[in-house]
Structure formats: C-alpha cells, structure tokens
Image 1: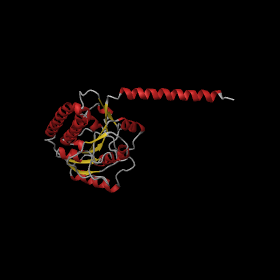
Image 2: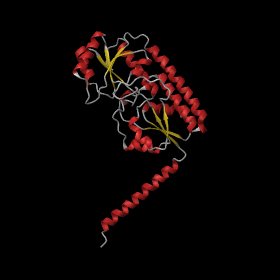
Image 3: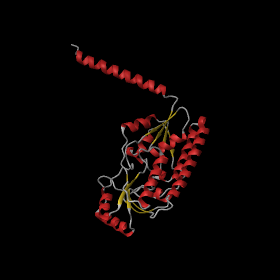
Length: 306
C-alpha cells in the first residue's frame, strides 16, 4: 500500500530541488556577462574596487570577511568556497599569506593574480614563514600591489584595459602621496620605538621610520611566557616607553598586564585585515591613516588610552 506521507515528502523534495535548480540557472544566466573578481582580504578588496571603479560588468567580492588579525590557522568556510567557485578572477595579496587556499586554487578555473609580484619583501617572523606577508601596511608597496593588479586586469579583460590602467595609475599615485603625507605627520615624534603584540607591523615600521624593539605574536591560547613578559617590562623601562601596541583583533591580555606593571598605556593598531566596526572607518586610506594617527598620539607625548 502506498504510504501517503512518504509520497508527499518525496514530491515536496522534488519540487524544492526543481525550484532551487531553476533559481540557480536563472542566477547563472543573469551573471554570464559579469566578471567576478574574488579578493582574498580587505586590502586587496579595496585595491580591486579602486582598479575596477566605473567599469561596467565587473563585480568585486571579498573572500575572507571575518574579524581576524592574520590567516595562519584560517579554514575556508562554505561561503568562502562558494565565492571562489563563482569567481572569474581571484586576487591574492601574495607573499605566502594565502597558502591555506592552495587546494581550492588548484581546483579553480579562475585567473589568479598575485599582487606581491616583484615587490621587495621582508623576512618572515613566524616559524616556517619565508616572507612577512603584511606588505600592504607600507603605502608605497600597496601602490605596487595596485599596479600589479591593474596590469593583470588589462591582460585578462583587454576590452576595459584603458580604464584599469587609468584607475591603477591614479590609485597608486594617491597611495604614494598618502605615504608622504603620513610621514610628515610623524616627523615630530618624541619616540620612534615600538613594542607590538603582533608580528605584522614590519612594513609599517619601515615605511614610517619606526623601530620595533620587540614583537610577539600573541593569540588566544598562545600568550607570552613569563620570560617574554620580563624582557618586555625591561625594554619598557629601559627606553622609558609611554605606549605599547596590540592588534585590534588579537589578544591584549599580556599588554594590559605589562601596562599595569609599568604604567604605560596600551594602544590598538590594525593590520587592516578587517574593519573594526566601532571605528566608523572604511577604505584602505582611512584605515592606514588611523594607524598612523594612533602612533602619533601614543608616541607624541599624549597619555590617553586609545
């Protein structure tokens, strides 16, 4: 005898499958003329948005949108994989940052752009890390990343080559100009020495003539050792530092403990991997400017905690 309930469930399942399939085909048909660029991180997303500004039929999506300070242990989500699968172009920051994506990239048919090509890289600070991948924190290197991106987009989509070239040149010039302006902002610092609780600020320090005395990659579950803490306390006292710095999305437990011991203040910097919502900022230039202003406030004599 036919089970009516089972039959009803089967029919419903078939109907749902048909609806989803038809929706998928409709979406695919609607997006056939759209060139989808998947940018791995927020900085690369900003670069791709700038390079493609005003170009019709191009959509830029960001793959990793989580509030993270680094991608060392990042695992791709279903949502991430969907964006990668739908992309025509995948824009990487490069320098090893996206090694966790190797398998996904191997199975993708998209054109891949490595924005770090031909850029002078600093040595890595993590075990097994050949290069420090946080190259966008130097505006001059960010300008080179934009130029790499625009050059490859000219090759991939020659129909809009002139627009990509113009956008790339203007954006790169703007970033270099920003770097000059921000260096002027920091000219009168009373101290140029930093202690950071994240290893990603080497390019930032080099770009703005700052000296990193010590950097510790501190994440939840991997806090600094007692020896590290004593060494940092010694440096704070030796250099009479008024401020130490942590990454906005990382742990500040040790930094706060050292602040209590030494009377120094704790300030937050961002690696720009994601946008802190409570900052009310958007875009590469605003975020980098914010970091520089924090350094100016912290090392220019002000004692207010950021």
